[in-house]
Length: 406
Image (cartoon, rainbow, N blue to C red; front, top):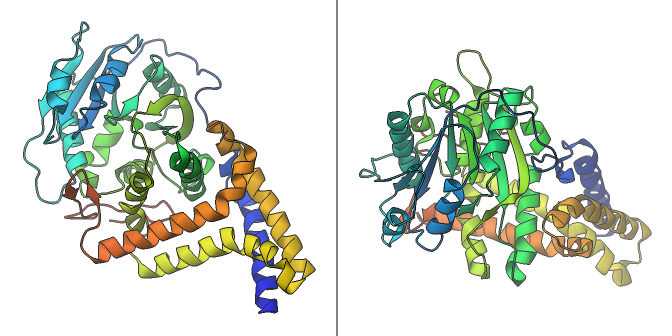
């Protein structure tokens, strides 16, 4: 037992040294559009925003209003597709004041077999966008619960045009108010960056690919070249799947991605209760592991090694009085604080909150196991009252390496 604790604590220390020094600098939170504007293009290309919405009456008015006040200098329209809402989502959207005439509200046709509801709504929206403005260079895919600042689109397009990008995506600032959100949401963002290091995503030569579904600007001809939204029609983790497909490219040409963080775009969806965050993670965690029991086992063991061994070694010092595991545990805890600090700063949390990361890691491990159990019971992918199965009828899933699998 003594040898096992020593070996595990030293291995955990080396894991954190690797994460800080060799894992793409994911923890730095330095991929930002907020810190400096890109040069503006001589001519601003046309853009159509596509907003899929289902049962979003509480937030859709605020979200659409933030889109309609964009200060974008080029031609810009907004298409909201109602995904069979059972509330007043469509009525709220239709009643919204739109002096610019930019907004189109349309219902989605019946959901075909093999499609997720959201992606079918996005597909319906892209088709309507093509009819509204067939010359639009970009599609702006954004969720119905996102609040945008007036300069959002201008910054996205400037970045895409300056760097000749096929996809630009931002992870919006998630709600982090209240005890559970304050504890779990910054860690969620930290884990996402660890899983998909943003600098690797933004390295055009690296295979890592990802995107954040709340805000994706995609070049329309790049999307059409890979088969459009139909290419990913059964994907449950649609944002990262889209990023993987775009970066893989077509015809020998790889796509160019950029994924970053922002504090200017915010999620309007509150996470006040533990169960809301639990459901958000459980919905797709096992899909992230490609429904593999072996990847599930490896993930749980990896989480235990990475987040739990160090505090166990420290707290059990009165029992074992061993210097090596105790010192290794203290060093590992210090590295956790260093790694988490930029994400905690992003969410205006004190650095000491990193000391709770082992407990948070345990909770997320339990969520991942619960996601697998839900999938095994045939209830995986539940969202907004519907069960969605990933990888249906030619859909695409994304493994941990970030490569698409047909």
